[in-house]
Amino acid sequence: MALLFLLTALAGVAMLRCEGKTVSGFFSSDIARQSGGQQVAKFLFHGTNALLSCQIDNNTVAVDKDAKLHLFHEQIWLKLQEDTGRVNCLVKFSEAQLTISLDDVENNQTISQFLHPQAWYIVYADRFTCPEEDENERGTDGIAAKTIKFKLLLLNPDAANNPLDHFSAEESGLHDFYFLLVLAYFIAACIYTQPIWRSIKKGGPMHTVLKVLSIGLLLQAGAAFTNYMHLSRYSVDGIGTPLLGSLAELCDMVSQIQMLYMLMSLCMGWTLGRMGRTQGRLLQWDTTPTSTAIAIVAVITQGILLLWEQFEATDHHSYHAHQSMAALLLIALRVCLALLLASSLYQIITMERSALKRDFYISFAKGCILWFLCHPALVATSMMFAEYQREKIIIIAVTLCQSISMVILYRLFISRSLYWEVSALSSVSLPLTMSSGYRSRYSS
Image (cartoon, rainbow, N blue to C red):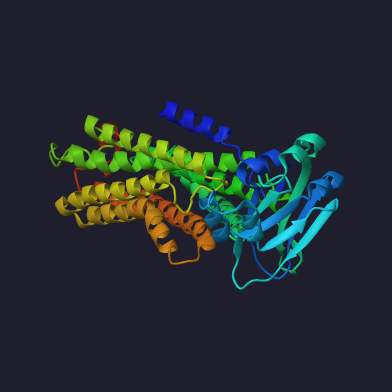
């Protein structure tokens, strides 16, 4: 497990991406010619005063090259890219919905109002882009070899309808969500940190589970805080702090892996271990080689799929709309794990005679199923919404559902009245006992 966490950490640090909405770089005639247009950025404009501002360092070269930015609606650009080879190069750029000539040091263009947010591709091209142009002219004057340094600002209207908002339409609202989430974590920490710490410090049947759950919650809170810091900076400069975005993804991945291992170990340990035990034996966490193997395989598989998904992603989000193979496999894995755990818990609940213990197992089952199924269910539900809203809905809803799942588990594990009543009513200690050493201490 330690090796897996180390690999996850190294991968998280390596996945630094800079996909902000302030884009800097160089316009290149060679790149534009080889690719049929240099794709610069994608942005979802909305509102009445959306703005594109392109600043260049040498407008003389840009004028000599007849440099232009072409704006295409997403569906049109993707269709033209599929038809490359069948569509004439010059005809392709004539399909652009908007063309901006880069004939000044700063070139501003207000984007027209539309009924719904639309994704636009911004593509650079000049007179050397299409192969119909004179090859000799390109080789003799040397203009084509010169690059143009640029800085592109993509802005949506803010609350005052001024073009100052760096967030694309599919990202709007996430900054406020993370602010409220961090505030909620802070308030909850002020209220509940001391009683939780007392419960962990004094030991008892729930000691190990509470420690693992608390570490998972701290990682979730850390992911929320680093996302908030990244988006706070992003709202100012359109770039943010990519390192913080990667750190948030890393915290979430480690939390997901840790929670999976804990829940799998508990459920599989109960089921596989209970069949060969007498009723008086303790139910312990992860006591059989089979349950250990199943939990480890599930954890490693999820870890690999999480890393694969993050490598394919183009932004700093822990949850995505799931259009890649890795993401679909991750969804399938979570559904299979939810069904496996539901089957395991159903066997335990049907075999249990104590009503108090059945209530305990049922509550635990609710927390487990919510943790695993909220993501697949919300991905399916998001298909009813517009494409630009899906990822935002998934991020917010999954984060809230998994937080609720943690609250359910906390309430269950910390409930003193429940586990003292259980140990007082039976010679068997509380379910989830970590070692047989607790039996003599807490059983009646």
